[in-house]
Amino acid sequence: MMRAENARSVVDGNAIAGLLAELFAQDMTAMDGECGGCGARAPLANSVVELDEVAAIVRCRSCTHTLFTVLRDGERLRLRIGSLVALEGP
Ligand SMILES: [Zn+2]
Image (cartoon, rainbow, N blue to C red; front, top):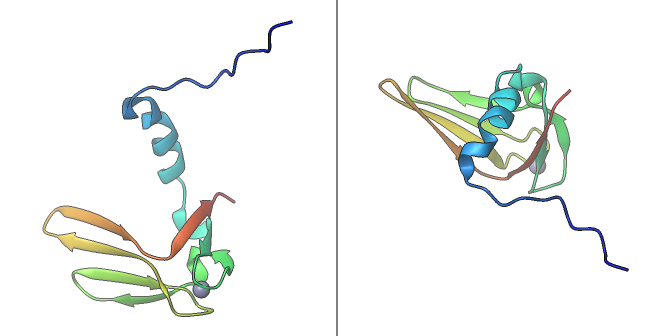
């Protein structure tokens, strides 16, 4: 008897456009972020943010590791991932 085929398909990144739009369209501050530095898990709204005109450095409230940084360069935004290892919707 043959085993059932795995239904996973391998495609290019265009296939995740809808998933990414769904993920990032919600209130990101309500999402739980998991810190790879200490394992703490908390809504991003509870993190500590160092903010100025060009950057928002988002730190874990438990261990102070940088979870991620958002940089503004004129009209462009850049997201640099630090110790953030997971995001989970509310
Ligand atoms: Zn941490």
